[in-house]
Image (tube, rainbow, N blue to C red):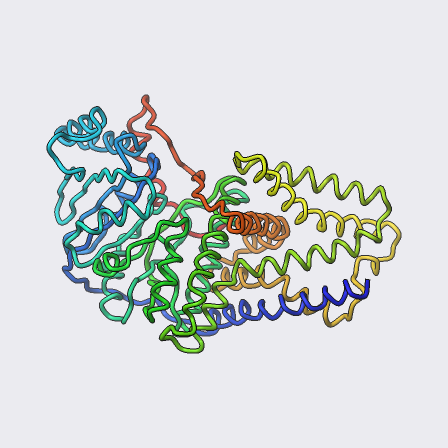
Length: 520
């Protein structure tokens, strides 16, 4: 037991040391405040905006409408990028033009839906031109997002290009302000700020806390420290020449792969702190975990791919430290997993056989239940997922069982590890780093209402375990080579337009665009 407790001490101190980076960024965010900038004027530069879609239904129309409302004064070419005529966004697009009474466009879409393509034409169709904005439908003939974008970028002649995912709706000044920033700063990409369309429900709430409070806090801190931020795959503006010379790679996180490639060349991504987009959030357990396992797998793969390039990269010492801090974001969970398991093993020996059996069986049921939501087809992979989740949740239930025993006998000292009190305090500080940084983000973004703070604190333990469960599954994917894209559900997502109601389909995007961007 002495050796086991010694390992617990070592891992607790290591995790606390990594947590210092989180606390430091939170402190920088709160103390180095930057006033919102007033962007008054904009240029006349032409820009192409790419909206890659993969059976997004009505969400694609919402994204397009937000782009048609952009206040950029120059020409804006908007491309809805789909694989083929079977994409579910096309019927919604057809209904949009029915409402606008543009019969020629409807006829063109009918022909595309019927034949799959128009004979004698390229697979890029001009649908509508209004004022300075032109809307195109592009049938790329490929499914992955990266391949769609790479295919179209080679055909563009505009000096700037932007990317907006279908589950996002851009703020009206996004293009104008981003182009201004790109021209002012020595930047390769301008990454817009992301906010939620809505954050109701447990999974949407925590998805938004992580992405729109936590990640945006780090972006702000990185910016104030003179460091790069990282491309998120959407709501970004760059020069077309950059994307032509550095096409997206075919991987499940092409955004972070491109970010690291630019980083190793000494190029920066800067944040547009004043404008960006609002996005859909994960409405259920499957989507919540699927996003995290994809990020963990792709992020870690990209980190190891570029790690060997770091010594020769033309960057400063603090940039190298940032790369290591950012790149090990998901790998540090392995340390949490090991420490968690060691604690579980220690307390397991303190329980009666009945309590041991109860904890192990209950955690197996939890593991089976979560694994069943992940739609994994291969039996061997599903078994590995169950075993991994069992190993993650079993120590938690063992510790809980021990705490209950301690409460029943009136001896709470049974619930503590017999290691130095200072080490336990340091470990607790490290464990609480995520929620403390998120609370700092809520304060800094003026979203720290009593309801939000209470909800965050009370539900943090559940979110913590589920978040790490998703990351562990992603690291397992990385280790076993199961790196595949997983479709996720989106709030307000419709696979096909309702035949009985044209108005409901068309007005959904407007309703979403006016939703509050704050977490409640």
